[in-house]
Image 1 (tube, each protein chain N blue to C red):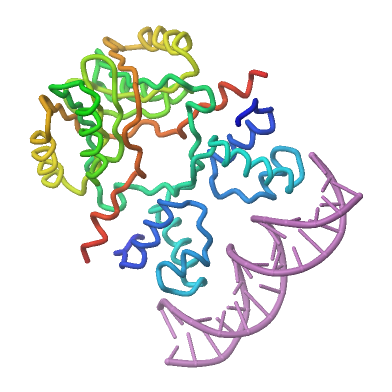
Image 2 (image 1 turned 30 degrees about the vertical axis):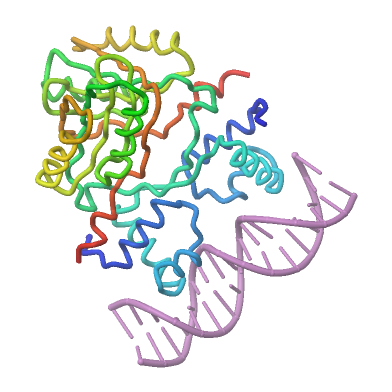
Length: 160
Length: 160
DNA sequence: ATTGAAATCGCGCCACC
DNA sequence: GGTGGCGCGATTTCAAT
């Protein structure tokens, strides 16, 4: 299915990660090939799963979502079925934007976004009452210091 | 600068957040207006800062970045200058993809991505030695349970 | 087998109503 | 907010290496 990527593929991924709306013509110019093979490479990268999708980045604060909170959740059970149950719960909760299962003392970390504190507190009440939730610790985000794209491709560009 | 958004604007933002490469023609069809005014709205939303950019989403695991870690960092100083200094440090570190300043007992939470554990551990050594870093606690991500777009616009679509 | 060149087709984007 | 139209980019076909 997926073979090795050459330098051109890596450059394509880097450009697309940086600007999801770059035109194929411009992309081809930047990576040093002509548009048709460039487009074929992009399609292949999409099909093979390197590119999972494209998103517009919205500004939560400007849209009235002033409250961002990280929540650490500890469950009373680590049985796979219970973990799956908790994942289903957070997937159904619009306020939860990201959920990561962790090793160590905390089982899950949630990134939550809400229009105001009251809405968030109401959600925390639901969260605390969810099955097998033993402990919830929340930390309010004061400000975002860095928000880079998901993959540090520059670490790989150097390698062959 | 920014006024209130109507239902059409919200629908546009939702579609763009979901698919950053949607064509203007398709977008116009979905929100129920013709392409030219639709494009004008998008440009306005971009200029006013509701849309901050567009990104392709890459799959870290498929690209050989198998290690995702959340790091909690506690500083020995909360002076603004020292906070800014720490922010400058993480912005220069490719492994750090996100950094959030928090209220409560932890000062910062970092989302880090690395190709392997050795690379990450090497980074932690640098991090621990950074100015005013008192304490670092790391949690390895076992799996990602949810990764939604940044803003839960569906919470606002209902409102007028 | 993969690239690049040419040609077609649809979209982005500007005019104006 | 809608209509019309021009030019560019996306996409396919095909020749060439």
